[in-house]
Image (cartoon, rainbow, N blue to C red; front, side, top):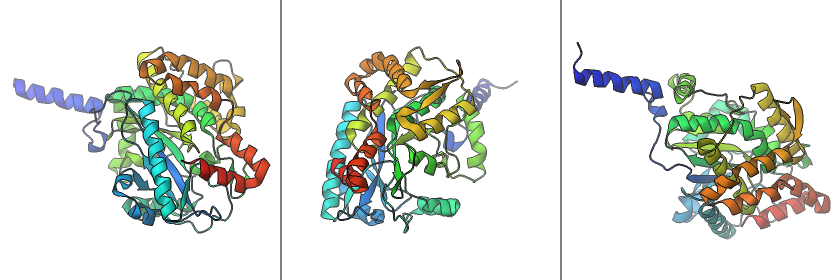
Length: 388
């Protein structure tokens, strides 16, 4: 008969198996607080005279101040950098830091003869000399993605929400699957690419999905099921770690966060702020409110995601219950209304209220208005001027 110590070891191993933590990559970081947020945004480097892409991310990063370098990193494309805030408990602090980092970056780039700008895609034509950033990660991306790594650059806004318990993270992952099309419609900010109107509100979505392991993740019933689904990819060596899952919403076990990645990069912090508030409030609604888990089919979610990317705020999405098309503006307003008490509890009610403005006209709409008034040169000039 096993000793008490042996029985305890068996119980510990059973718990490890239940939560999937026996895989090193799946060890969930429980150290953070619920609903803390961190923001990452990708931005493009431009030459001031003609707004051409500057393929110099590695050189730029090396020349930044020590303070700013700690918050910046290169991306796959050498013309793109990523800016990351610290961890914050409230949206106001996160967006204040975001605005400060943008201003400092614009200042330091100006001394290098460059300008930053932010949107889901680079609107102008002539993106022929695509360079991949140096470094082991992006060398691996280039080697495994091959010609896909040299597609048109895309820029996104990523929001991390702190979740200390992995099964709560699964609950959030499942819930965010349902609202991906609404978030995408609100954040659509890439109607132009290669010098022309693509007909899409978020062309970034269409371009980025040429990569594998993109789109909306499937539903998982537990963290154990998630680990068992993902471990063959990582355990076999096909993927080095879960950051090579480029889903619209993904788990970050090492950080203890759920990362919402479906949104286009926003031209201004004023447009990023309500999106960040909405995501934090949805997390609070799901974990502490009355969230109805709809279990929409993959076919409905995939089609709604396409409609949102194509039509933006003019999209009409499938309601799986009534089998009718519903205006996405109505869905966005209803979601914001449900989130208001949760935003109040989190201290981001003012930021969430700005969703009403974004649901009236998003970045894609404004880009098209400027293009009609002054062409794509006006789009680029305004985009660069509004960055900081």
